[in-house]
Every structure is written in C-alpha cells, then in structure tokens.
Length: 409
Ligand code: PMP
Image 1 (cartoon, helix red, strand yellow):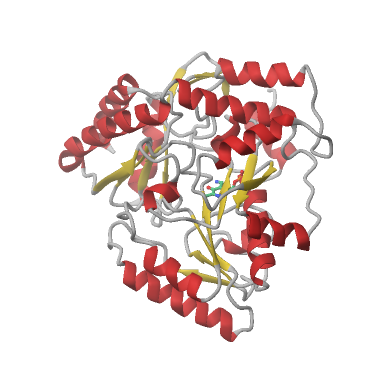
Image 2 (cartoon, rainbow, N blue to C red):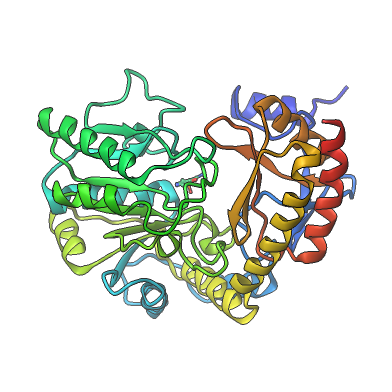
C-alpha cells in the first residue's frame, strides 16, 4: 500500500507537526471564503484570516503576478513600491505612527518591536499576558506561557493574567497586576521597556473589553518609562468592522504597531510601524536589514489588499455580517448550551462549557463542511474568523449546521 499523506508528512516534516481536525482536510483549492479538498468536497472557511479578502482574490493574484514578472529585489535599491505602501499604511493609523519597517512574518515584526522598545528606553523588561502568542523567534517565544522555552522563561519577561471574558475584566485590577510586573522588572534590574498586547486579545478568546478598559494599565507602563506595542496580527486590517485596528477599538494610541497575517492575503508580508523617535533610536542601535521584507512583490500584494478592502467595502460588510452571525448564535445560545457570544466584525467567539465539547463541535462541523477552530484561555471558545469575503448567506448556512451539530455534541 502506498504511504499516506499523513505518514509522508511525519517522515518529511518530523513528528508532532500539528494538523487540524481528527480527520485532517487535504485542501487543494480556495476561492472567496470557500476551499475544496482533493475529492472535490466544498467547505465554508470560517477559520482562515490570512486570505483576508478571500482565497485567491483575482486582484491580489494579478498584482503579485504583474510585479513578479517585472522586478523583485530587496530594499537596498530605490523603489516606489515600499514607499507608496508605507505611506498609505501609516495614513490608516494615528498621527503618532509615521514610518515602518517591512518584514515577512508577524514573529519578525514583534521581534523588531521588542528591540525598538529596548532601543528607545535602554531597558529590556517586557510585559505580556499569560495566555498570549506573539510568534516563534527565540526572543518572541519567551512571551509564550503555553509553549514555555527550554530552561524556563527569562527573568526580563513579566506576565500578567490575560483578561477572562467569563470571570469579567476589572481595568483597575489589571493595572495593579501591571504595576506589580513593572516593580518586579525594576527590582531585577531590567527596567520596563514596554508592554506587548493584542488589543483585541484574539488568542485569549476575544474578551469584549469596553473601549478605555486598558487605559489604566497602559498609563502604569508609561509612568515607568515603557512603550506600548499593539500586536495587530490578528485584529488588524478591518476584521473588526467599524474599527480598522484593534487598538482603535480599544481607544488607545500605541507607540509601536505590528501586523502580519492578513496583510498580503497569504503572501508573506508583515510590518512594524512606529513614530520618528522610536525609529531613529532603533536605526541608531541596529543596522537592521531584512532580505525579503518590503520587496516589490510583497508591497504589490499588500497594496492590492488595501485596494480590495476599500473598493469592496469589506470592513463595513464584516460589521453587518458579524452582527448577523452573533445574533443567530445568541438566538440559539440558551437552547444549545452556548455560555457567551462575543466579538466584533468577523472575529466571533462562542464560549462552550468545556474544551472537550468545543473539540467535538469543531470536528463535527468539519465533517459537515465548515472549517472553524477553538481557542481562549480554556480552549472552550468556538472561533469563527473567516475571510472577509464571508457574507450573510454563508453565515446563515453556518448557523443552520451549527444548530444541528450543537444539538448532539
Ligand atoms: N501575533 C499574534 C497575535 C499571532 O496570533 C501570531 C500568529 N498566530 C503571531 C503574532 C505570529 O505571526 P507569524 O506566524 O506570522 O510569525
């Protein structure tokens, strides 16, 4: 018998390389918010935020192909592509953000952000929540408690409890935790370079914090001389509907903004944006260069994403579709044992009573042709985070199937 794809994958990629679902999906094609497997079966994609404006969006494909057929090189030559893009990108943020470094992954963006915070403050202490993920470089993976580094977390990282949607969030209590973290970092001689947060806490399970809820904690960080880094890898680029950025919804003005995933619709492009003073401190301290970051093809892909978001009015549509989806989930909540429905735009969480049930539901949905995931601090939150091409018709279909699946799972 010939080797299965799963066995071949284990042999070539090594053990313990995660696959989604008990019965993994062999995807071969995607379009809009749908993907197809090797048998031709269609799935509604409610999980993937990287193909932000839709799988294989023709305008992004065309922009990549056109630029790849013209020129692709790095940023040590003059080229308008990166300048046009960065100008447009920073124009979508507050006035404190004026320039950017383009990189290839969210991890790299956060790695640079940590070094920017160090360069401008001269300190190394950094605060993060205890249920976050900011990426996989050796510096950034220090922030993760779910996959702790060998030898344990280094002492310059201080964790504060992640907001919990079910227990409730007290801004003053969170600020006290941050104050205690600053005191620990100072006592150890690290000082406070800053705090790094996903302002919408997607990996923490979408706790719906009211605007302004982070202000007291961020004021503490600033009083200790630290900067605020907003990780927009998950919430950014219009996913939240009315708010183009998670930090905009949180009502905060970060000093550094990192982004990735949806930025190039699948092309590996990411960025870290900041103001002049921080950029000057970073550029003065390090001669940073990224071979692929900001290449003309990446910039063309990223620019096409902004064009499509604008021309197809996708953030506004995400707001409407998301409301519709959450109304449907709320309607079935009591009947189907959903404890809490929350989210904004096309980032929706539906909290169940346990991880085991969330796993059963996610697997049953996959068998019924809907791809979704589960996350949160108890891994009990159904995560519905589709490409923004997802519309009301797809939401209705997903609600119908979910209602049936929840009845038996
Ligand atoms: N920040 C957040 C909030 C993320 O969720 C992720 C990836 N899941 C990253 C950073 C890392 O991005 P990448 O995988 O592109 O390195």
